[in-house]
Image 1 (cartoon, one colour):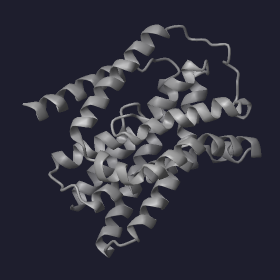
Image 2 (spheres, one colour; image 1 turned 90 degrees about the vertical axis):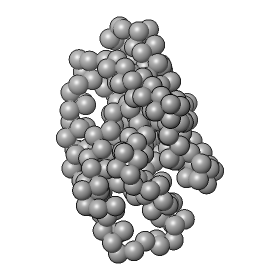
Image 3 (cartoon, rainbow, N blue to C red; image 1 turned 60 degrees about the horizontal axis):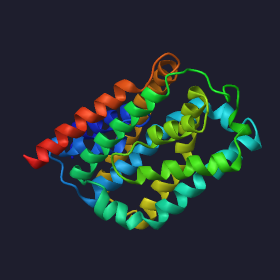
Length: 259
């Protein structure tokens, strides 16, 4: 994998991490289009650079994250289901799920259909919980959101999309749950990256570490811009466009594999 490939993957990660279209799916699709072999290194690379995008959230929201112990605690509580499921299924995820293009195509398609159905049934803007804060979320709500996020261990299922739709179904305000989906990604990707590096034994060459570092930096810079844009976008728009995008991409991938 050369420098250009690394930059392209970093940009793809930064753009797609917080959109409800699955960054993992797009990284797999992109590295296949670039004809990069699906090795253990590329799988680890695609996990590590996601942490770069998550770092953008830390920079943008650091005041809120550490504004109160309750705020920080609630993020940690919501992470529990994802952490348990992620650790339990690590071998299956990395050995059989990552890189499975047919699975990715199907999940993109199904996810797009779910988004369109949800948006069609949820046209009203306000909810009873419009003024609820992250500190006020109950343990039940937090664990429910964490459990929903864990569905994203399946490539093609968007982590942010799942949390946002799950939160809206719980009656939470769109801006609140979108922000929370960003924050919940912090412990999730920190744990995923640390665990993957530990399991791999840090057995990468100096060149591979440099490649990871470059991808990390690129995804961080791009994600900074995307997060700011998305926060403004969701104030006046639905996620319908992302639903149609997922359906089209899913059909293209499935058709390519079948044909």
